[in-house]
Image 1 (cartoon, helix red, strand yellow):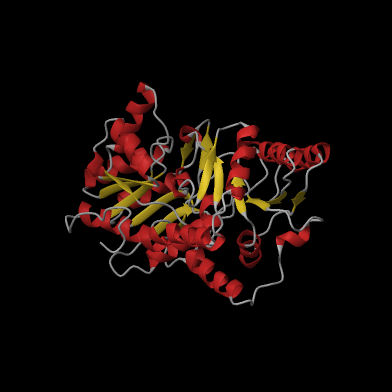
Image 2 (cartoon, rainbow, N blue to C red; image 1 turned 30 degrees about the vertical axis):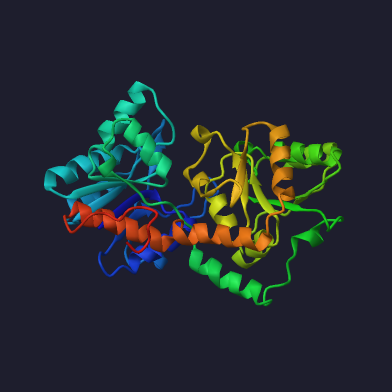
Length: 382
């Protein structure tokens, strides 16, 4: 099998390794080995067979000449990125179909209802494949609403390195990782800690979080805000925090998972006011619930990991008053912290992990090759 992506981000290393360990199928990865826009890519040496495939954008369209190589070679199936703006995926898919090679697409899929032209182009593109592998159930529902056959859409979720998370969690809970306590970063250590681990960019809307912190302070229930990451908005956010006189610690970028784990594990809740994406996975792996906005047409698929009242909550998008209320409601709901931690970790263990992804991907491949029906998402082991 060939898997062709524009790049293979570092956070996909775990699912790549899990695919590499498969005893059912063998995989060759095609992707650009350069990092882009501050996103670190996986080390090719982590994989048994990784082929460098540089790409570049012309206007809004991506060109990746080596994406054609697997379609022209003797692979049984090619899994392409499902973005219709990836020109070579169109060409490669057509060539593969002519040669009798199975084609699958993997990616976000449908994120929102689209107008007729966009919907038509997407459906034409996706019909070049036998299966479209999407991150979340809503993506499948939107695809069906757009007229795509439900049988040809498979939800495979998304994931981070849960094996490493479990290893680090074991050290934390055994008391062997105890040097980093987020409360100690603040003058008022008894206040709840609201964390987010993400790049400080405009799209993340951390200004809303700081304004919500100001509202809570004025209501007599101040919080400590811990922002772990760097980015273009750091200076502006630091100035805003000073003007609002709220307690915010700008920790900077952290790449050591043992340090990130301790910060997340020992915080009360993650708040990502903009799109949440894999931040939800990162938080819940360590048992910390997540809050983000509930306008799903402007969300990333991973928002589905949030079950209101169990693993987090939603607020009205772009509304700092409602964000403040949602944070206060969560902190005041009296939920047992260990029960919440267990619910978060169970969510990850059930769906959002590399092993489950591989089961679902290979179930889809089995169905394509006629070796059996694909697995039903959300039912591991069946």
